[in-house]
Length: 116
Length: 114
View 1: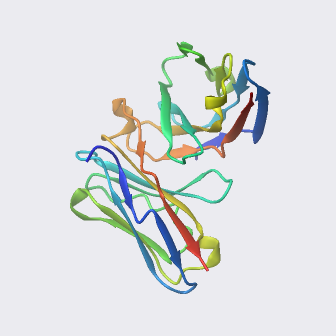
View 2 (view 1 turned 45 degrees about the vertical axis):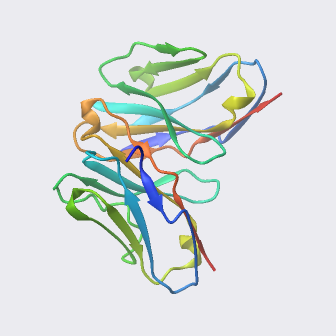
């Protein structure tokens, strides 16, 4: 597609439920990032996929968070047993290969998750 | 470990004033990349600039300019003759060479008052 697409744009869920957030990166982009932005805060790194390499999961805040990227394209971020502190905007970004190859990351518009 | 510090949380200026947004970074990589992104009220981050660690030349793009100084590990961003449309949150970011994640600062919220 023309840009990074995230769905849903808004999600309200009850505490304790599982949620899945989807990211469609720009076609051909091998790198995909998930970030979390809490209200009025900066971007918190969650996970990074690069091609077929093992993902960098160092930013996932707990084992309730997981992500996968199928076929090197679409990615799903799953949050199990959601808590109120999980409420945030979840941003996905993709880039054409390594940032060492003169590229920048293109961001989606985010999914606003509200846990009630 | 990588770290980006944007000490200015919020800045307010009157339209047409110049404003500088500070960014200080930490990295052990000898090759790295620095970025600035703009997040307007609509929420979508917009890429502004990328610099690599080997190029310390300052860059100017219209009313925007960037001052990269390795000696002080800083990559500051100046907006000349600010406009109301410049109101946004600005993020500085860092990536190590090769296949590494991008680390963002906490952002500086700029408000330009007409």
